[in-house]
Amino acid sequence: MVETGLGDAYVPHVVDNEEVDCYNYFAPEIKSKEVFSLILPPPNITGTLHLGHALTTTIQDVIVRWKRMEGVECVWVPGIDHAGIATQVVVEKQLWKEKRQSRHDVGREAFEERVWKWKDEKGRVIENQLRRLGASLDWNRKVFTMDPTQSREVTKAFIELFDSGLIYRADHLVNWSCSLQSAISDIEVDHVEVDGPTPIPLETNTVANISRGVLNWLGDAYVPHVVDNEEVDCYNYFAPEIKSKEVFSLILPPPNITGTLHLGHALTTTIQDVIVRWKRMEGVECVWVPGIDHAGIATQVVVEKQLWKEKRQSRHDVGREAFEERVWKWKDEKGRVIENQLRRLGASLDWNRKVFTMDPTQSREVTKAFIELFDSGLIYRADHLVNWSCSLQSAISDIEVDHVEVDGPTPIPVPNYDRPIEFGTLTYFAYKLHNSEEEIVVATTRPETMLGDVAVAVNPRDDRYARYIGRYLWHPFRAETIPVIGDDSVEPDFGTVATKPEWCILRAVVDKSCCGLGFVTE
Image 1 (spheres, helix red, strand yellow):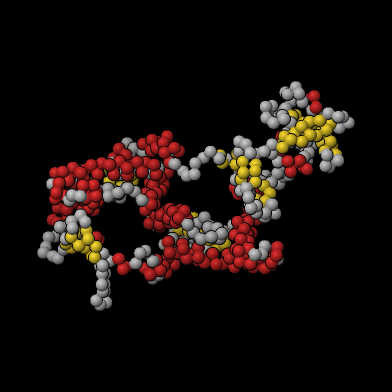
Image 2 (spheres, rainbow, N blue to C red):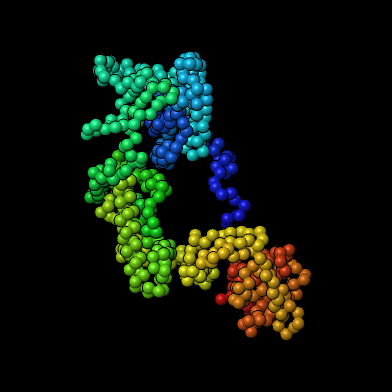
């Protein structure tokens, strides 16, 4: 149900405040020597979490939950990273913005105090974000990269690496930042090749008041086809020849051909990719099958919209054959785009096994599955109300119907109408009793359906109408009689208390006589 009183956006603190504390559950007392442990790559305290953190945290969460499901004791350690010079820069910018002072102006002690305050504030925000994300971290073990224990371990590691000759000290050119007055790592330096004299704009660094180069002519955005065209073909590697009977297989939930992939596909595909790669790392033969879904009526709708937009024609205007040809053309175009998107995403799918839900093999298997379900009595055919689309002239599934509750007359936009249509208005009309001048007034918000009325329901405990149960009413349009039936679900205080019965009420009297009338609904 969709209530009109809901807000325009999802507000997490309204919805999940009561749920967050349950994640304190993931604080195991380790009883085994064999423990599966992961360390959350500690987010930098330079700011708060962004979408990339949500993605990588979700991937780790999937792995840890997977291992717990296998009965393995797991420790997933959260923490935050001091981020060194990067944090110094953002705190300096904040100081300059607020007081027009540099760190040299306030002195080392005052500046360090400001940095620690920044760390505490951002640390609390990051922890809160991770908790609300639902990450099953062990918060009893959270760390900070400058905690004494962590610092000692880092120092110890460096000494061991130095003693073993894996790292060393030597005279060497360094990356010197005039602004920071410090050496910086290679990862913080952009190396750009120029083919000749190239004018590069300079920008003033207001924190240290020293000019630094800004290579803004590189382009405003990452252009995938420039960077990764040569990398895509390597994913054809994931086409195994199955030699074992024990195979780990996954089917990619086939994207609908109604459009192209969106961020949700990127997330769920990545999660499956992590699982499959994990199993390959364990030496398991894996098959991950890609495909696309025809999406039935949904695809018909988008192709019809395209046809109307381009030619101002409906599918009836062009005819069945021409319209189907247009749908297959749409499928081929969108299918190529979707496959290209999945390849560029780096999904390690087995493209030799790609399928389409309307391929002959898939169609036969679906038919076979339905027959087996029918024969076993798990699915059946019956007369039942359906969701009928006047626009599509077809029945549609429950998932494609929006149920909206209204408390009174409410204008609601309706497809193919230029203005909203008012719903929730009660319309009253009377049914005369057969061979009598008496009448029962019925209230309904759907007066057009009275043409198909097969009964009128009243509450048998309502003294005003109980005496009419078992009698007949005269239908004014069909020139035939319909019975009055009793059911406790009729609300005694709503409308006129007489109503057109819901399907569930009618089903209750199937194959039963109604007050001796022999009334049935089928």
